[in-house]
Length: 136
Image 1: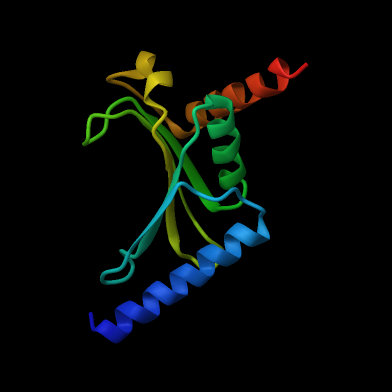
Image 2: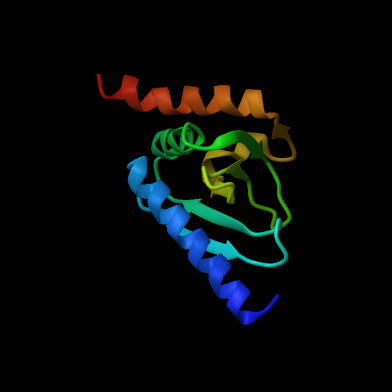
């Protein structure tokens, strides 16, 4: 891939992600990583960070509601031995995206296991709802 093609892909992805963040009033991510190679392997990775599990869950659900074909997963162990929650999907311009959070101390009971997309979605809703009930 030429330097010009890489620059064009990065510019396209940055513009799409910026537009998406503004359009859906998404909170500012902790970290964004863009990976450009031979398309269709280009993707964006967005890291969410908070000390509050209900805020992480609500933020991930907000993201899931804005993506095409969102696939949430809770993974008790990953390649780097940390638990994470992730949502794979696509932005409206078809940019592949992965939104992740690593709330390790909140996922101790999931070590060595994973939840499928439907279970993960239910679990996220349950965690997000604790913020609502705690505020009453």
